[in-house]
Length: 236
Image (cartoon, rainbow, N blue to C red; front, side):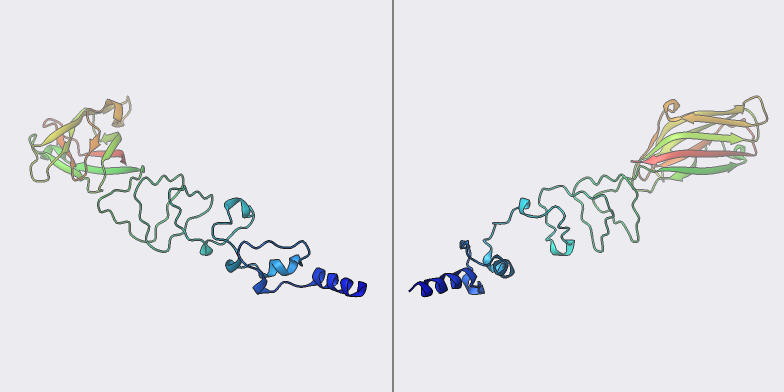
């Protein structure tokens, strides 16, 4: 009798666990072989919803290809690159602290992409006295899809005391719808250089709406060979 009991205990202690022995919610006996148990755990033996975020090791580094990327209302943050091989739909604000590299087309339908980038508009007007005083010469049209904000206007010429006016032009076919940007005087600084530099704070008007333009009007008494204009602008 004693021998039989000993044999029974040995069999219980050393018996292996088969796949059919594990069911959801089952309790693992203390005498069971733990390594056999770990090898047999699969999706069929784990209760749905049992594994929570705290159960996943911080260094697990689970591949993104194994994740369903529907994050609900959670924020997504990364310190690395974001490569998109398909379409990206944006319904909100996309704040970018670095650069965007494009190898394709950005389509603008009912929204707009705002790029706070500084650009320079350069224009040269030759023999402006040949323009009648009443003539308004369009020198730039804003077809960017954004509002253009004027940061500064630098102008220079080959002679002293050159007067002109710049306007925002609201209609490509009606040059009477004008908003004055500023009156400008190109003059000497005591040398043979004749220029004017006007910052946005000194201008009467600084925003050029989409589909609007900038027009030049020369003083009828000034006869320079040329007037150069360089407008520094940014889009919003």
